[in-house]
Amino acid sequence: MTDLPSLNSLRAFDVAGRRLSFRAAADELGVTQGAVAQHVRQLEADLGIVLFDRVPKGLALTSIGRSYHDRVARAFSDLRSATAQIKPEPGKVTISVTPTFASKWLIPNLPDFSDKHPGIDLRILATEKVSSFHSDGIDLAIRQGNPPFGAALNATLLFAQDVIAVSAPTLVEHAAVPVDATTLAQLPKIHDTHDLWPRVLADLDVVDQSKRGLRLSQTALAVDAAVSGQGVALVSRFLVSADIAAANLLDLGLDFQVDSQDFYLLTLRKRAPNPAIGTVVDWLTSQTSG
Picture (cartoon, rainbow, N blue to C red):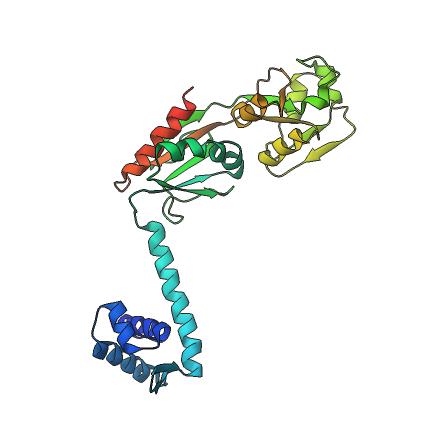
């Protein structure tokens, strides 16, 4: 395996290649101009190639030097990014949530958080994947499931699952609310990845008689489709409470016993000291305790 050049030499080359001046590179690195020049000469000797042409006004990268510098610069950029992700920063908190939770609850409630805690930089990683606290550099996660989630994690209940049927008011303007099971069976259904409709209809002892349906990959999309009048969606009450209050959606008033998973806030049992994380945890639990 080919040995890598000295990291100090590569760093000096990276900065000198950006600044095209040994003096400017020395100022950025906090060393002498001679030290930078020596590191670059050593790198050229190790590689057996000329990386810079020395010109009257400073430096110019050779053709092969420019190509090599592009890759070295990217490598140092990746190192800086990786370090920034795992290095604790006071006032910065990264939270991993599903796209539906982000768009239907967290983002609409962020103005309250920002008003109360303007000094905290809350960063949202919206993904359906199971995020890793270590490799993804997250501080908190909100996930749907049943504890325990792992020996290294604490789980705090945020929302108990409470599934309701909702639709645009215009979809049921000629029906009495709460709607009966027969009427529900005839209405168009909006399906998401949780696929709750078969269980709900079976519990109501009716067969789906709707002439059309819509299948979507995320609950957030199902909510948006319901608002636009595309059908009836089965969703967690807390995700649509704002739309119900704004009369964008109507709770059809049916009582479902759906055996589904609750929403939990996950935190590391042992984590680096960061008071901002505790502040975000306190805010989340205060918002959802009611």
